[in-house]
Length: 116
Length: 410
Image (tube, rainbow over all chains, first blue to last red; front, side, top):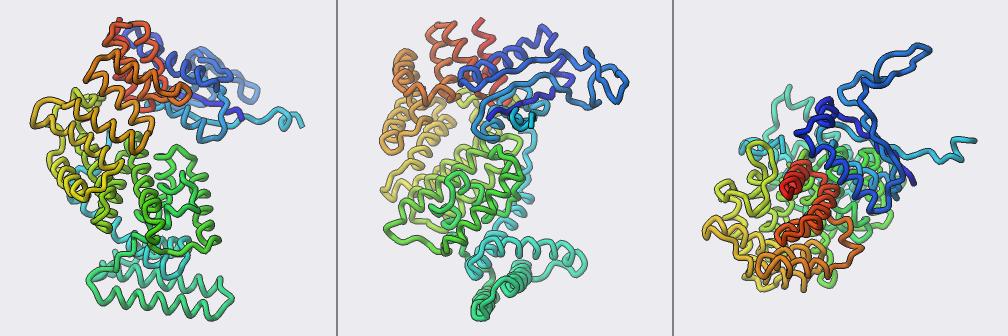
């Protein structure tokens, strides 16, 4: 079963990406994704640029920035192979920003069901 | 560990009184009605009624008796609605009345919590659900809080708890203390579940008070079974670990590893209690895994007096521990001790002998390996191991500590 792990990061975490004094930010992410990769469970994913760099289409209008004006914003996601939601949660709990933001875990809808 | 809700002794005493009352009343209701789920619902309803009634009428002279009587009537009502056999109804009523009479006679309720502990760890209960079930039934913790500590969806945890209780009912499993031939395995299951609850609280710093709940359970078992050496061993182990809780973080919230902790920051009263309980256990002459783990902590605690850590003793205790209980954690701990006593190379050799598939995603293995490689001056191997350890850490303070160690390698 595949699960999407969605990382919602605080403004401080987004700022750390550009901060030379916060090399630990990227080191934490590189180590984290490395261990998931080593376990053979990583099925994909991406880091996203900051919410201010994008735009949202909502009911026919284009707005600057993200869809929801929340404190934490989507910073990236992984797709992982896991036997259960608990296993995916265990992986999610190790995210470097789990303590400062939010991590959401969602089972992926198998394509055969989506196409029906 | 941002919250330290149990620092205040008055609050701790109040929480302890509630924990005591909850398990005692539930045990009586469950044993007499033979149905854990119905007993829990009735007690929850009685507690809800108390919250309405007591602020108006004042707290009754015997609050536990009030709760038991109220819950007892609710159990009888439920039994009456559910049961089709008139005789069964009468049995329930009779048994519950008997328990009330017993209780009114004394100052406190008879303590039947041992039976509750054994039911929660009955072989019919899934191993992974024994600790959660114990936390819910003996201490009255809600499913959401248990779910967070065990990293499970709250809705899933609730469903699983309900399922375990119906398994007990379907299996006709009685609330009884196991017989002699089953005793060692069943007692071990109780101790394992408490230790499982403690570990969930240890890892989850946002939920640190779960560790305190586990200490309460360990103390309870030791009190109910004062002649079981391993029960005392578990209590001593948890006391020792909890004695150092505050010292594991500096004033800025950063992780401080054991060998860099200032013993002045350890809780002397808890260490003294841990030592006393361990001494009692060891005199019983029935050594086991929990006593040996407590003995390891005892050697570490001795640094507050001697100023140094006796690693040779630690290694000797690990050797005995592995002979009794060859857990991966103990084997990694032994390798770390070899690294101290002999040389980092020898410690590494011990690590290399561990099965690769079992250590591949085991954080303590990588953290120990990184430390030993760094001591040997093998920078790139140390970096690789630190990255693995960092990626496998869920405690952010520990992760930051490891990130700093990695950065210092250059």
